[in-house]
Image 1 (cartoon, helix red, strand yellow):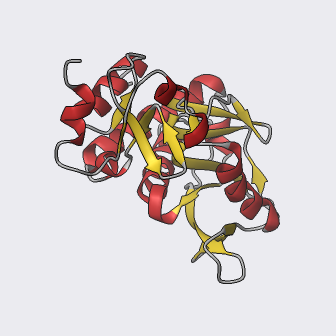
Image 2: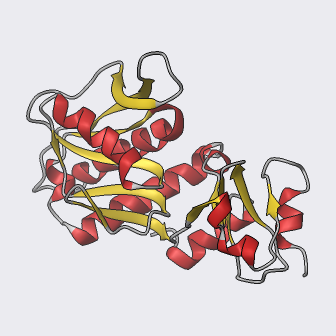
Length: 233
């Protein structure tokens, strides 16, 4: 393992990619949009831009899966993740699975494959209604390890698993992610294996408890956003 959970949190924070509110009402919290607030964020783009770091993350995820299920790495056929958000992570995980098999004489020499998905809107609206494969999909009866860079809730990751089962693939008993912020440990019968498990609640703006305590909102993206989030109160 390159890092344990605490070290991954530190690494993500060093990259200004991960932050959670400390409960001090004098400190701001996150404005997702005019309707929703959150008490933290994870910006996976700041991790994916570093291939070396993403490679280390994929290696640790494969090791964590092996700890949970020593045989799964030997039998999984394909890794599937969203193209725009976790395509590089899915490729890295599939590569590490293939490499792990080469070092395991009892495992099949078959290489692990990878596919990516993309979201589609319903009836030309802004509502993301379903997920399809971008390029090569899943072949019937393949065992698929689902991955995403961050798991936010059951609905979004559920769209990926639905795409797999629609193609008559089988979803593995585990799924992987860099950060599990959903608060769930299992989604659709698959246990979540994450480098970091930290629930990050999202509230309607009118129901935000941090606002009621006097905290103010901050929209991420500005050059000073990180400094404002971490400034002394």
